[in-house]
Length: 341
Length: 259
Image 1: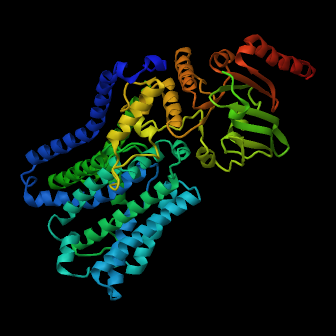
Image 2: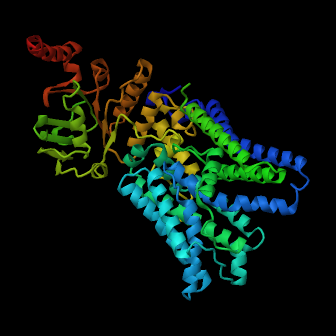
Image 3: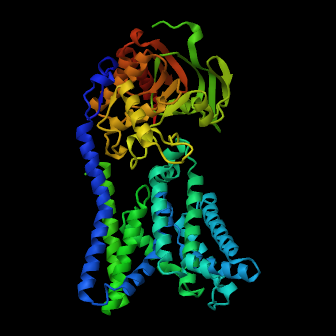
């Protein structure tokens, strides 16, 4: 209970620190919030155990590598989506960015530019296209659900046009290919490092705080002087750049740049992973680690079903249900946070 | 508390605000002395919010002059007004429910371990707690998210944030709106505490005359876009304020009957 004490009785030293009871509550709260990550981790482990028992092929090095391949590219995309979702936006075009970026690498390299520089050019192009998403969304006040749906088709069209609809073999520069996805686990290592790095950015930098503030109270954040449009713009740029990076690495890993790669499937999987991991579609709430674990659980489920010979249709049913349950849990969680029953 | 004429921190002279053919403020002059709490009363639509928005730089007056510390200024924007020490707490409070109390208090003024871009949460937590203690706001913990606090606690946090800057002039837009008696009393106590400290001057918009007489040094009544009463709180009474408003009602009665 709040208490506004008269100043004379409110000298800090004699004020009874009522911190104890509330630290308990905030601890409990933090535990509950952390539990979102904890519970999704438990789900992932239970799935591992279940599939491990059900199929002798499941707990093998090859198969764990397959899971890591499902996981890596999608989780990198999910990181960008988490930032956007928290600040109250979404990017539906990341799957197309994923397909386009490798072709930018390819054609820039074809023009005689060294591969490393081509990769940087492609990442900068992704960044610019993210800025385009941000510009359209912010300037014309179009909901990003619509504006990035437009970009999604635009980018797919560009990719199909410049590639002629045919896959190409990526350029080869030995160690660079290995680092950029072709080496065993290189994509996984990137994915883990990116998740850790951006969790730190989200939790411990002004950028992260302002991302939460923008999604939590857009008007309030701008009244406090936060440049909410700049925050949104940066997060659009981040999401597109990470999607481009994931696409390039996936292309190097499978040693083919495919215009049909990614698309809406990888985008929805990334968003689903984020939501299952506790990110609110309404903004203001979410973690990168949660999204990583969410994508992990989906990857295990996907791979396990494949091994058991369960139809992909069943997987979609499970995925759909998992998203619905996660959404309902999120709403319950935010209702609880508001302290209104 | 008698203040010499020279200690007027905010003065507005003959403010007129027109929206096309509609006149929101016809001729308003007010002054705010250093360390005083000025209650601004008035019916809905009397122009209170318009006046506050002009004083906070959100709206530009059609005519009239504004002086801050006796210097004439044209308040270009909220940021400009803020740079002159004018802070406003609006009814929506501008707090982020999902964030902790101390992150809200330091929103957009976050402390970092410079040159590292990492937040210095420990320092912010400590300073937030100290500041709340100093002005006498007690909340369970600065670590709780704002969404978990009561309406009164949130209002207190919003006021505390406004005065934690270099604010010299605080504009409170209905700080007691939609608040129960107990919570309202806490906010009145907070305003009282700020007045005791004396280095901040407050204009408070309110509906409840009793609360205003309780905490304010002076009362201004705004009716039909102009100030109709300007008295020290001790020189006026609930009866006088009620009479002033009832007179207005009676004025409107015959017209209402003619329809």
